[in-house]
Figure 1: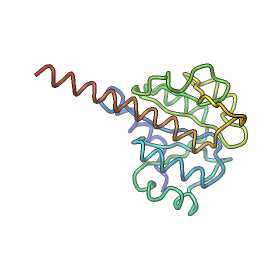
Figure 2: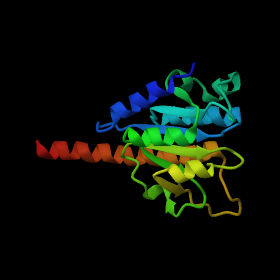
Figure 3: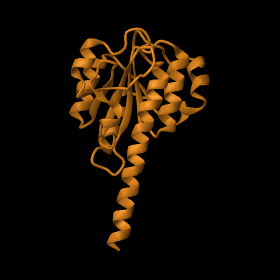
Figure 4: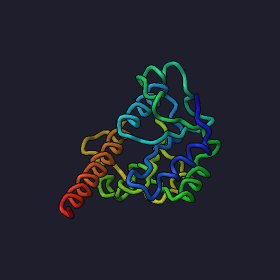
Length: 184
């Protein structure tokens, strides 16, 4: 059921420099299987090329995850990583920008260029992204929250940011198409 981590890393690296750069999701300690399933489903719908989960202290691929993913496990590879902080370094070494979503970040998620090779990192329900993982990310972004609650559910946060990536990538493709048509 799991894709080997090296295989997914190689597949992402193969997309660097192409017209469809890699987009991955890295989860750091998501424990609720319904959240994991919802994130996998959203990642598939957003065209992400893979999801990484930690080997320990996180939900595995259970029947509940499969049910929440609503068939997405058939289309989006999920790999287990022994160490998320090391995985961040491996992604960076393969040309993939690592972007953590944390509430204390200065940069809004809409200001990051999601058209480049990217991995979105999201922390678990309780503590968010761990300090060591945060420190290794290329960038940190936040979702502006206007109410009194300090955070979104992790699966909702994944959807918000992934669909900003979809918006930017769709606009970039439309722009490239217009340029091609104007050149003819």
